[in-house]
Image 1 (cartoon, helix red, strand yellow):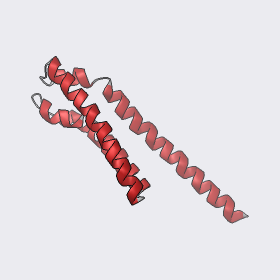
Image 2: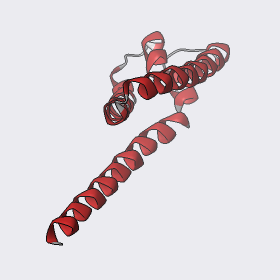
Image 3: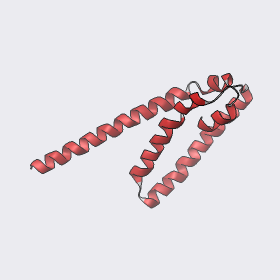
Image 4: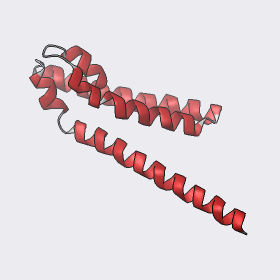
Length: 111
């Protein structure tokens, strides 16, 4: 009985931890999403380039979801893929601060 209780506590702790990770990943992603246009404008992009890059970024994001979903289903590496995705998200967006004034092309790959 004690073993099942301990196992349940570990599972609940893990689920709560992953919820916290997801919370911070969503916070960085959605928070950055609201300032992409202004930030890319500060880096020297015009409105047409900003519109193209953000639209193309959305397209690439959805395409990657499709292919990574297929790969995940076939490989059965659900947690590895989820952790890699969270890691990339939580590293790429804060890394935008490292882009210099005319580095809009480099910043476009992170947004």
